[in-house]
Length: 198
Length: 184
Picture (cartoon, rainbow over the protein chains, first blue to last red):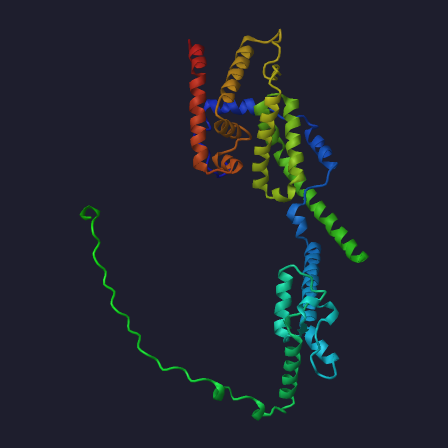
């Protein structure tokens, strides 16, 4: 009739009887009652609504804001050491933490590390959950070592390094002893003696 | 910003209108199906209408996921069937069945016999395992063929064929005594 395959057993009397049993119609008001029932509530939009262009544009805007904030934060971190260097006209590296903030017991001062080391240290601090607002010392050495290191850096930068003043480490090095053959005597192991033999 | 909000609201209204139109179409073409599925379990018109109405209300609340016609009808059948069984379990004490009204004084003997046979057939259908029962009911509603029943149950056609075969076999066995007594 409609071109579709019909169930071969559908013509049996039993099927006709079942069809007659089920040939009951709802009251004429049924559809109207369903309409009235659903009219009181909003139709389920589900994901179809959430993927509408308006929501897509809001989501894209959110992603852009988050990405922008991330880039801004990263730029601020990377700019940190060079900004300080530019603000110091003498070019010398001042301690990044005032002496008052350094624990007195340590009797040491902080020396600014290269930017890459500082950023890496800051990332480690962030991963460890410590605050980056109060900058802590990246490397701590004794005050004498800090002064000497700073002078050395200044001299090297000014190309005023007197090579003759640098001690010749090779001359002062003691000669290594000659290699000698190590002879180890053979170790003879006597066979185990049974307990019964004793 | 106001302009954006207005466009947003406009899109909402348009989407709602489209969904409403689709739901109306599904309601008109599937109301008989839902009602008869519920009726096959409850055999009481008012109860069947209540259950079918509840199923449509649930479908309305999740309509975005049910916009596809085949999916909607399959979901509606399952939901109506489940709700009807729940209603039946919670209303076991109801004894009055629409198919067995109080015997009318002017009922002819043939009508009484037909009524009794119908009642036995209902009992036999109710005694079938649930999967066989739903398959035989759906095949008896609106002349559904095997392909349509398979779509409504979301199972392969071969599965429907085997379920219908088993259901008919069991029904014939359970009704054979009636046919034997009728031929005597």
